[in-house]
Image (cartoon, rainbow, N blue to C red):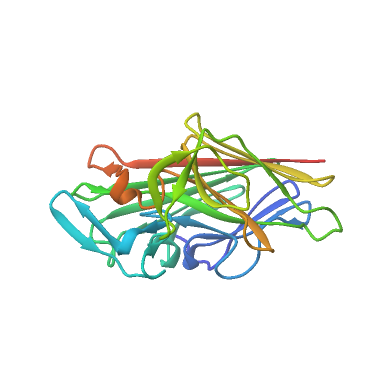
Length: 265
């Protein structure tokens, strides 16, 4: 197994850099020399696992067993523990790589998380899986990419296009109320339902078009920062450990995938 701090994959003129020891985060995605992701140690694109977005008050239950998570976004717990964990490299070469880590405190259950990357000259497919070593537990998985709003070559800012079936209404605590509403115009920091699968297109006019797809039916879109926009496919909504739990069992792991595909304009 490899211990390199950075893993670089390449296909044609596309380069991908993954930082396994820094939460198995994509640090860089360059297409034809153009960087697509916001740079910085908390940016790029990171996995959200074993939960996505905010968990209310850092609390959830597994049957009659109640748990408390660290409040890393008070008063809530946000984005899981995977992004703060050193992952191990199982294999890497050419355009493919695989990584894993074992669930541990502060997550109260044991298990393993895996993540694989497959890069071609016009797409990137990422898969993530969560399995248990014994006890079944609720979990979520997804990704939080920070795509640059402007690619820096004098072109226009990115345009985000998608057609969700519904939008999750947000309460004053910035968590879904449980009510589904007609999608509203942006700016957004909102969760949307796409029951036929996530399908969101980002267009930098005259430069590049990139489509984010996933069989998952949930996506959070965040475009309230000047530097970047986020399109986050995930296996459930924010606070889903409580409102829409998906259980990882010894015979049924949690599996999710996303594909980013692009073309020059």
